[in-house]
Image (spheres, rainbow, N blue to C red):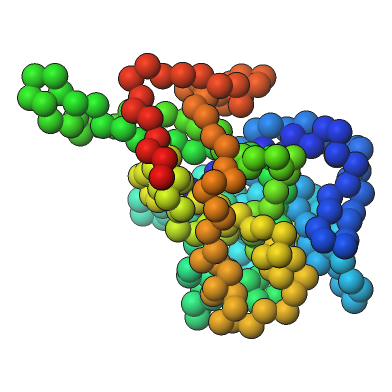
Length: 268
């Protein structure tokens, strides 16, 4: 799933979507090649303006906060896990992503946001792992434990692009803190991403300009939304390369790194 994104927007003065644009605020951190969703920090997000045309840029917290949580303490318990009264550990609920094919199902946490609060997350590239099972030299059979190879994925000739998202307003009922949070919508992988993210065969829902405009500023009904969340960005427009295993610790996480034992991606 998409838990690591980049927003390295140095040199960009504005974000454009068809005839609309919004100025980037230079006080915002525009030089972030790697953002970890597990930090639950803020990201640059486009949301629809209220009662007028166009969009605005917002800084939103990555990690959708359900309305049934009332305080930051409850949010922290959801995100990190906790022990219940019996001492049994309740694992964390990771709400960084929303499964596109499921977000409109009745009773789903993301349904209302998908219908009324869609957004676009700006990206300059994201990160995924490819799982490869080494062959046991003695038996000739694949080992049970896979080796993980990280990749950086971006789009050709695109300084930035858009991922579909859903967002949620939330207020801490103890402190009055107001937060806007979001989740990145995911979809089934195209044939390239199915090879890179081969453990899950999922990818963020990347949208071209026409689909991004419709998602953010259009008025699609549920049937059309179901079609959009299954959109697959053409693999021919992707760029990708392997990066160091410790990329999360490096000042330049996107730097190419070759692995001698890694089979190549099979291109169509």
